[in-house]
Image 1 (cartoon, each protein chain N blue to C red):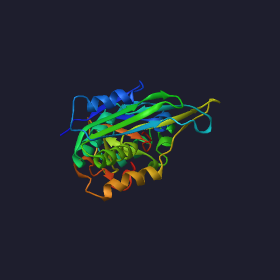
Image 2 (image 1 turned 180 degrees about the horizontal axis):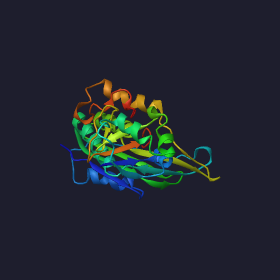
Image 3 (image 1 turned 90 degrees about the horizontal axis):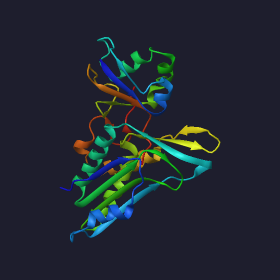
Image 4 (image 1 turned 90 degrees about the vertical axis):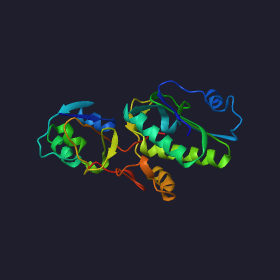
Length: 84
Length: 173
């Protein structure tokens, strides 16, 4: 089980703030998770349609597409940050 | 080393009160630098609404502040970032740095706001008087401003392999 969080317009497109998911063992990294999540609903597909516009964090640290993911991780997807 | 004060809150902050906390009872502070980010009323803006990632936000700001304290000899450092709805004219973010000398205070203050804008998980949504709403897009100029602090020194332990020195956090896929 992984906990997936969505923020800003990614959250709006997915239609959820967070969800618990259990991807197959073939999903080993952030890029793999994005591909798998994209199949879950039209909202997910829309959110991840242009993955280069989305940033990720694994266990609350920014993560690149090749960053590993595993059961128990907290993975977040969001647009580039705009605070300050 | 200085322990930074970090707060993420809905309430407004008081620059004078926060400044006093960094100087009260001390005689080693030679300069206090501050940056206050305010909500501009661009294009009929009615309010900014700030969303963040609770937990990661505090971690990210703590890392950025720790980096500032490692790079400059600070006697004090305060970062306060608001979330929720902020009307035009309202304060959004406060960065305060204190040091024995002005250069450290001024430079670290600029560093902190540059990195906060590109490395802390906040997102701004603009609400307009006519009911329209749109997410603010990240600016390349902000990445460039943040990158100038990376060219001078190795980014060290606070920026893992996940954040490139010139582009900030990379794409998810």
